[in-house]
Amino acid sequence: MTIPQDRLRQLPAVDKMLQLEAVTDLVLRYGRGSVVKALRAELECVRHAILNNQAAAIEAESILAQAAQRLNQHFLPSLRPVINATGVIIHTNLGRALLSQEAQQAVTEVAANYSNLEFDLDTGKRGSRYIHAEESLKELTNAEAALVVNNNAAALFLVLSALAKDHSAIVSRGQLVEIGGGFRIPDIMVQSGARLIEVGTTNRTRIADYAHAIVDDTAMLMRIHASNFRIVGFVENPTLEELAHLAHERGIYFVDDIGSGAMHNTEIYGLLHEPTVSESIAAGADLVLFSGDKLLGGPQAGIIVGRKVLIQKLKKHPLARAMRADKMCYAALSATLDHYRKNEFMAKIPIWRMIAASLDELEARALSWSQQIGQGEVIRSESAVGGGSLPGTTLPTAVLAITPTPTSTDGFAAKLRGVSPSIIVRIAEGRVLLDPRTVLPEQEDRLVSILKAIINDPL
Ligand SMILES: *Cc1c(COP(=O)(O)O)cnc(C)c1O
Figure 1 (cartoon, rainbow, N blue to C red):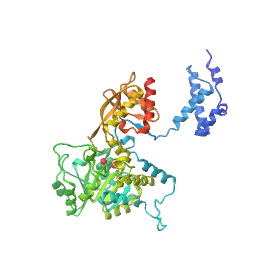
Figure 2: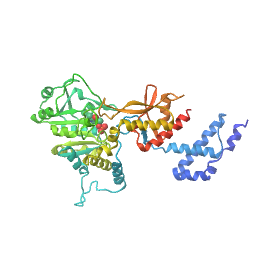
Figure 3: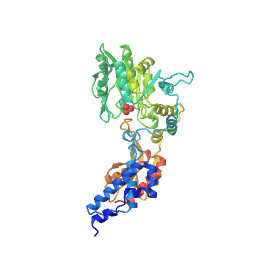
Figure 4: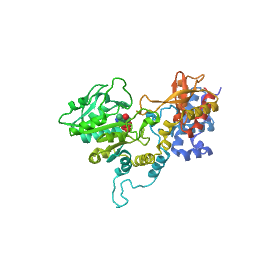
């Protein structure tokens, strides 16, 4: 056996390694400094192994290969695409809605070019960014005016700060929801300086409860859509018309946070009813708030539509500047709204295509996966809309169910996360389930080849 000192002496020097042909490529890709660092780190690992009498490859090529792997890991973007095989369409943790091709294109164009973001092309003078999605939003919702901010939580905060600070806002107890990630509507309200008045009970709130709670300093009645859960049974809530009527009779506002922002009636697609923007406007809401990246299927945004005088007030509020949407958001949002204006959203917007996918089509895809990898069974299951939309609604689907051997389901799922792109799956009843509904057709080949590789190399 060679003594460690001999092997240490045989280790290649960093300077020598830098002259290798193969290193040139790495230097071009990652920069000289990073390559030197990676080589040093790799050599240090080998030295450590040698001194501890562990096996270690000391040839320059293998050290280089290790360093290349290290660099690859090091430069892997923190935020990167994954394959969503969970069947949860608006998956909050996986980035919610996907943009249509047209919306992606619009983002790329404004990102790569100067634009008329705040420039009036007619007058040659300074313009306002707020105009960019406004006409489309007005056209689609019948509202008088619209404003886009960063997300719906910001929209809620802005509306309360501008219209209810040092005043009270009345909300039903059944609507004081937590929207996820520990963010609670009542906390947002308190931060805005509005005084929250809770009325009714968890399951029943009557119009008289609101009427009794209105006092001199009351600024608004609010409806907050309980987006991520459903109370069924002995439930009562006033209609939007009743709330709007009461508010206006008493000279205060009615603000409706509908959460998901459906543009059309969801029942016709076999789903439950989800509040739509135009029905709230039609019912008399002064302002309606919703997200851009839930059922709308666009970029992260908070959209406020409603009465012009109020939108005007919001636009002038100092907080609006702190919450303003960026140019890429406007680009993506406008392109997304155009799909609705042209009534082509079912064909163009990814989340709607996924919702509309037929069981036959999904079954055929799952079957083709199982045939290609030679494993698993196609079974019926349920996909979910997710993203705090349509709670309790599931869509019948067909999934590929794999019983991994000899690994556990958790181990198999971890392996699928460990590859690039990571594949995120659902585990149920001791099996790993892959739902084609949320897997993009262009991802299928990668998915299949990764599955094959992992199944054939279970260790
Ligand atoms: C999702 C949701 C929000 C938060 O919207 P973000 O766009 O995620 O900030 C606020 N209110 C309701 C009712 C929601 O469903």
